[in-house]
Image 1 (cartoon, rainbow, N blue to C red):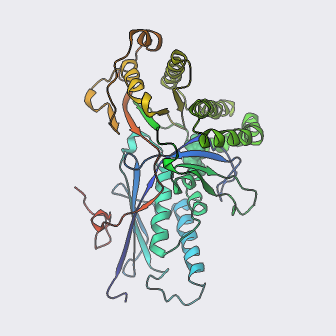
Image 2: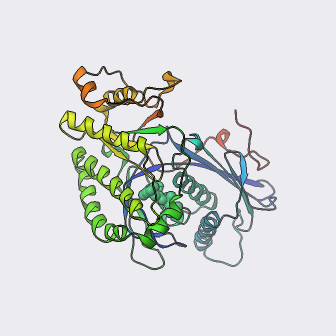
Image 3: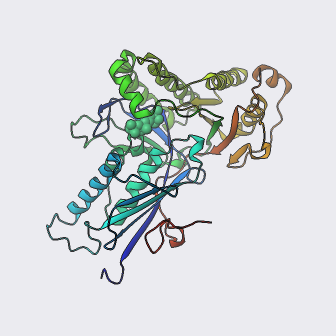
Length: 400
Ligand code: DP6
């Protein structure tokens, strides 16, 4: 059989997610077990996705990995943990027999190629989508089904939440072996059809302290983080689930902003302190609050992860007006026509009193572009063989 089909190829795509109750801190660094549960919204893959092709062949002499066309270290402990776990599940599924008689032997070496449909330079979190995609593709390759969030978690904590669409909770779990630290879907992506997401991609600024190192220092030094994990998050999680269930934007938006702010407060409480928010982030925060105050209720909600881009949640009927407010507040330096990307945005003209109340001190060029997206589904299998990132020789294809 192997003679006829020397190469088996599988391609999957996976989404980015953005947490509204943040994960920050591990109780086990190796198994990637968090100190608190978290909750996120999976973003639509039409705008942001990772694509991964995994191939196995008895002709391959070593495992290899390519990221955006460049060969990368397949020996990375987190990549290896995912590979090992998927193979373990495959072995279990095959009955654990010592004799490996399945058409695709678990001893074959594998090649993996992965690409993002968004520029890495944009600083958008890619490890969650990356590991969710890796695990999805490997699982398909080896015919493994069922609970895979536990495996994706071994790549990156937040990756377990990218294994499902819509609104997803990563349950902290109690067990030492992490078997109960899993992601669950709270509501599917169509649950809240009006919900929209605007990512404000900001200029300059490389990533300062990475999440993995940053959260470790926070666990070691921040008393606020301990209080957050033990007391604040359990209460907020229950509340957030209710807001989502009831599609209550006022409640959802306020809690999203508060939780982002508390996450950044724990960063400031870390010693030495970590600063992910900068002057521009604070500008965007103040702008959102002026906008909401002007309207008399929560129309937009910001959240920031371990980087400078702002993610704004809003409802479809507010998108055009808020985008116009951003355009006035951060007048695009160049490429004015490319300022808004992703889902179409309608035109809005801003009433004079809104402009006066909301747009103070414009900062030209500070926001590079806005990406308009919405909640979306979990990982997908790509059927079309022309989409494989690896060719018949098992090497990355040159794609037009
Ligand atoms: C601020 O999942 O990137 O985005 O588990 O060490 O890989 P590791 O960390 P990672 O941390 C994400 C932190 C966050 C909040 C969140 O997504 O919940």
